[in-house]
Length: 474
Ligand SMILES: Cc1ncc(COP(=O)(O)O)c(C=O)c1O
Ligand SMILES: N[C@@H](Cc1ccc(O)cc1)C(=O)O
Image 1 (cartoon, rainbow, N blue to C red):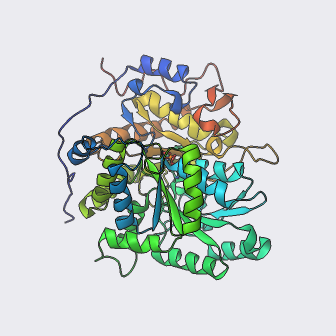
Image 2 (image 1 turned 45 degrees about the vertical axis):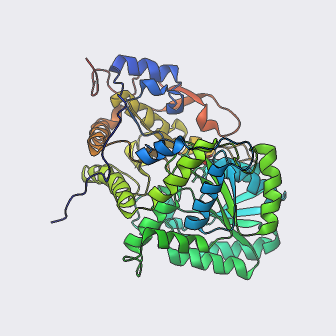
Image 3 (image 1 turned 30 degrees about the horizontal axis):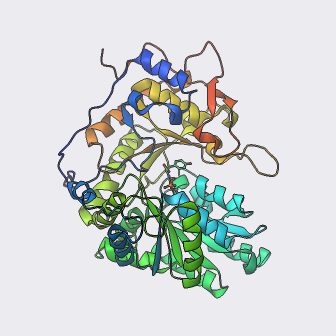
């Protein structure tokens, strides 16, 4: 018998949740233009929009806030954070940034020239936006299987080495400033990259003098999958796996808001002294002094402590198991989701869930809206809206994956919350034919998913039947 695992923490403070009625949720959704990003958090019951900046901090982190050194220059808290990153991640030079995209901005500005190509294992919205703003073209070099939600592979985030070497041959290594490898791959469903693949990418790139920069945002989760799935690592500590993974890179951008277990913060790390010197100059332009980079002293204290907590083997195994617990309930009910379940979220396959909708009717956006209406659970579209438009043709980019992301914040919800989410998704699946598509009424030019507004395609049609009132205070 497989023994069950409980949360490796107990609850010391609680935050009461709001439960609106169906009618109230309907109104809130309308006000938000059917975009879950625009719903007020006060109107949300279980918030699975993101795992970013939504972690619950430990008592030690809260305690650490009190010793934050708020000096403008040379903060002690920065020294502590720098030492933690150096010890656990292993890079020589580290610069603080307000969050991950601050690091992406500096890296992209310093390394990219117009006309360059930046290969990556599937795009991420902010990462690609910075690459494009600096004149680069993003090239997807993830294995083909990552674009198919149903294929079960242990390391579905892997780079296709053939695609990478073809690109190097076609455009020449001098037009590739670096390869960006995400660990894990958010847009593919939180899928990990194997140690072997990381090693091979690094060797290939270094043969051509190309740097490898990781998007290390969820690197601890990636380390857990290596321990679980890759031969030779089952007896290794997460800490050691992580160190080895990061040794196959020349630096990284990091959103501390995920695996570092804090609400804000990030960093840019590297081993090259010259890049570090130039990055310091840009940090003062965009972020602040190189001893705080947009974070307060207390933020840096909390992040240093969070980095140590994140590599605790019990913490990380419970984290991944909780995401899987939700995913397994959906699999058991035949709900189409991205397989295997990834590290930070369960992704519904909206194309299969709503086969009666065309991709231009925004099935994932409609499904996320219907889920909120059904139960007050907030999720996020990761499909055609997130993919934006082709910068040359102006047409919608049409990703093969049209997904709704149920993202699990770290240490925040219990498995009972997961049960409520599963019940809502399953009940929507049973009445999926009633979910209609959306039209986009307002579309911002960049990162459109954050602020776009929609309305139901048919005025007479409810997204789901109105009498259903799954979660209500009444
Ligand atoms: C994979 C990945 N990279 C980069 C970022 C950017 O980080 P941030 O939100 O801290 O700017 C995020 C989240 O936004 C992410 O999920
Ligand atoms: N990185 C965070 C926040 C975010 C969400 C959507 C984005 O496209 C960009 C950033 C996440 O993946 O949840």
